[in-house]
Length: 286
Length: 140
Image (cartoon, rainbow over all chains, first blue to last red; front, side):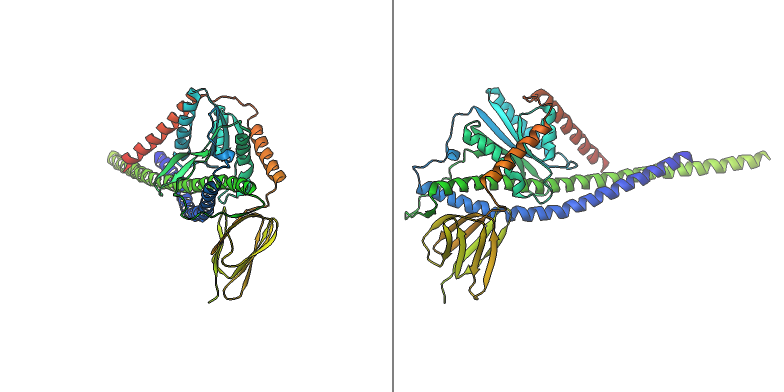
């Protein structure tokens, strides 16, 4: 029965693993719902700012903020939003692959790259591979605060304003639905001008203190809110991916247990048969 | 019926308040402003302080904002609230900290990405994932 006992302990240990993965699946499911709510809650702010910025651009065509000016590209920056924790399937791997693809293209044109990483997975990955990481923000938790991101973002925005960077991209996962998350690469700076129709009647805001300062503040807030959106969306993706991965793990554990149970039953039966035949042959000998 | 305007108070993280109001008072940069319906379009920075909203029912609602922007259109007022007190030196400090953290994490930094190594590693990870998926399909 030695083999049977080993199998039994193995089944026990797989059952324990299965309990954990099931619990993780359920936790991820409830966290995903909350993350999705947060994703929607953050949307009106960005939309509102976009409207105002679009209006400002129309009202002051002569003033061009550096954020909206296209320049010749010599250095590019990437803001990479990843997860803090693993066990979420291929989410980060796919993201990094999309990211490296874009980076390799720039590299071929002899363009330097600077990285700002959000989330410890990206930090670990690019640290190991050696990227020029200029700022990082990690351990944001499930409810990221914009305050925690400001530092990392400002490094990139300052670099852009100083002219050290000529283009800034944001890389994050796009939440399509629970089963699908897609890595996306967005151009953050220079901001793409929105192509909307001219207003029928010309009107303009009163500005306090003046239009340039307000625009400056507004654009910084706008970029920040875009990045914040990316981060929140990425968290929803993380939880969805984790949920799916943990569901797969629980299913796998289930089928493994089934197989082992069969093997165990066979071993037990064989042992009993053997014992009976030993007794019978023993009795026959007497 | 008294004239009303629509007030939205939103921050980057969430919507804070949305509803009808007869008047809104906000701490604009150049001093507190009171906004009634049909105010001229106005765009102003806000100082940290209190936004007061008078509702149709005559109630007064108070919201603390740590700065932000105020956008006024004749019948819509939007407060784009900051999530924390923002000052230039505070932001600067945060930026420095983010930089320092990155530098610390990268004591043994290599300045260039080893693309070949990165691709190989990712390919390996992807292959592992594919293998797991195949195993799963077979298991069923």
